[in-house]
Image (cartoon, rainbow, N blue to C red; front, side):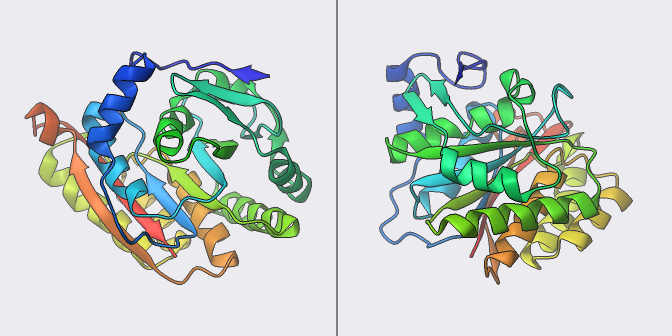
Length: 268
């Protein structure tokens, strides 16, 4: 199937020309790029989180395939959903699903189900794709939607099966988790809570991250996706993580009384 864009004209510009123009101001020229295993990207409207997303993806060496773990905000479809065939459309054109890698991951996982319903009205993966297309027009993806209610054991199982399925194909790829951080708290409160989560990611410790978020009531919507990403990246040999950029929506709106936090990070 062809997954049509559901949020063009809302989270990002609707036409190719206007989208390219906006992305040109968000993507940063970087001469030496990091050979990363994973990245963490925000998924809000580009006017709010685009500078964080652009700065992050600018610093990594893109591979031919990007495996994207998104958040299932809608609750539709399967708890752990993967699409193994077809393509996704954006105003920049068509992006094909890497069926070989996706199929191998699905075969390896006890949690993932073949499902498109979870993806149809979900923005967390869609908004990342134009950044990839802008930098590499023949990019392929593996879209995976993860329920925000997943348990830590499920996140670890998911991450390990993703890594195992990927390794069996023997090709290169970049792994991505799509998440925003604290939602609708003051800038000071958001920064304090988000720092705890960022420190756990820097420690490459998915258990610490999971517990910090739960214990501090941190409204990080993509927690299971990020925990799964850390687990997968460690299985693939990652040892370090770094913070590229952190901002809040208040930096755009000027309203610091109720913000959403955005963090861009790299794992290698």
